[in-house]
Image (cartoon, rainbow, N blue to C red; front, side):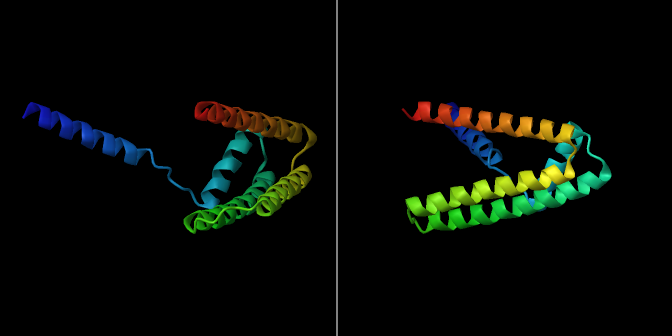
Length: 139
């Protein structure tokens, strides 16, 4: 009887733990708001800059959400992404990054822009590092 209770308790605790780890998706508006607040803290943005940056980040978040929805639909259809589609998506992502950087240059002063670029580079390095870790675990 004690073993049965123990098994039930362990099963229930693992189920609740697994449910709590599910990613809670935020809306593009929430993402933009959070990113704007973080940038305000990091770059000391004024209220005018905050409004402009939030609009830019909202636009980017909406684009990302559309791409995620599209990719999720393809996964559910079990369609393989062709190399041409992959190339097109990567080019689109790079174009979006270039566009965002150009718009940020108009909003941020040179010192803020330098800090923002450093943060972006650091973020890219961390993503690359986590990808390398994931690849090493698979091998």
